Image: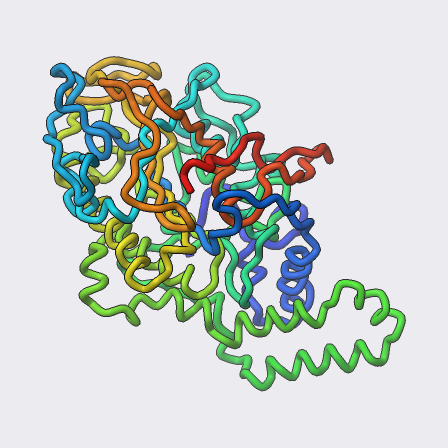
Length: 480
């Protein structure tokens, strides 16, 4: 598994990483860590029952995070009538839904527009200089960062951070079957040397971190930590459970002490996760037909979305797919940060990969009957500036590049109770500001919680033991 800088195998306070929780070669690890993880899940406070339109329609979420800031005008909100220097180099094409037009860079998504909704009015006004890392933090946690450096970057991940939305969901809506609750792949979020900010459980604790599958699914996946060690047979593994039961029976006081946590249930979940092989099977893309893999695209992003479908199908509650390039990387090697030369990368690299993979995921979920209760969200931390060649974030921009633009951009949402074939909200003639139904990214997170049957106002205690809502926003019920 990929190693993240500053994420050693064990924390300085001695607590276990998620990888260690799942390495069950020793009785100590299994006896203390994995069952404790399930215990913490079961003890989590249930969200208040609220109801309303779309409430509880979602069973699983695939969050496609297009880190780097994709250009909305060149993908999903074309403005061919705008002046030169705004409309961009691409033509618009008609989708299979009358009135919905996309850029010519997205022909496959145009053919399945009846299955998703375009939110063309995502918008927020940043506080100060707001580059990728700070925008990541807001998009994935629902909170703005306390401290932003002059460069717009944040400090590395901290136990004081607000948790990623997937961690909150893993805590409040654990899977119904023995399965990994929250998986993140194929690489961490990153801007320069700030790695995986907003990609942890923060003050919830490491037990609710995602399972980090930082590998390339297109190159094959190693799942050594989801199988028994070669020297530990299945029978021997089960015998350890029997030994634990015998010790419990002979130590009544300890038994009474631990019985309140219903440890039997948590041990059984731990055993089942390993012995059933459910997670390991979900990671095996070789079980998919070659034609399906080809349709998604034989590249990291495409195979990651296929993996996400398999994980949701196996019971995972939340999967986050990060665009597999550093947010502020080189556009000619898959980064969305197109401050210059937008034509070639969007036409030949990013556009086709996004188009093939996202359209295939949506169609695949629809064909197998999963789209009705699986919510797919595809969004970046911001869009790109309508006018080319201008500086909006302190960066230099060539005449054929676009800078960061959080004031108006587009998201795709599909399934989970949200009907397809719609446009929600509207941008102005230049794609620079919403003119109808603006949607803040935090409201989008509130909508995800709502769809899962979790009240966004549910309180969680932060690192200072202060009550805070999951997000301080209302769901966008008009999407349902």
